[in-house]
Length: 151
Image (cartoon, rainbow, N blue to C red; front, side, top):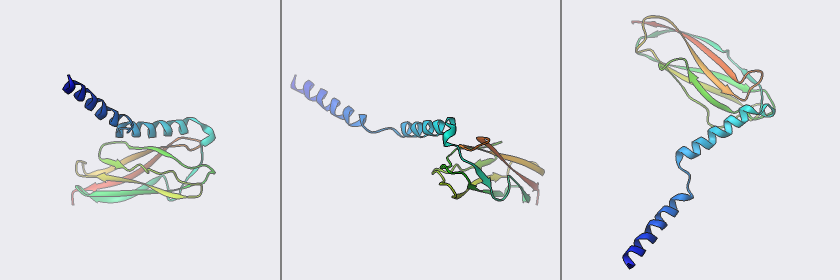
């Protein structure tokens, strides 16, 4: 009987220790929920200026080569700029999502890496989609061209 009681107490103790700490998935969901709330509240919207352009011609790239594309921006509004998601038009392009908000006047960059290995020779137009608390649109499209060659 004492062993059973001790076993139950031990199980309760181990289970109680886990209750106070959020799991990685829970923290990530909380972060996503916060970003969604910012996107739905237009009082938190700001403006963004793309410093170079929203289109870049990257020229020729040899098939199999990795190509890094960087789009520079500035938060031109008076609220923090929160980039909630950055995606690409296909799996050959992998963008990075900035983790931290950008204060008014701050500059930052959106980076994407294009893998030309599986591409046929010729011109390719790829898009990077940026979702942020920006007005007039929360959805920004960045494009680049690359001419894939055999050698």
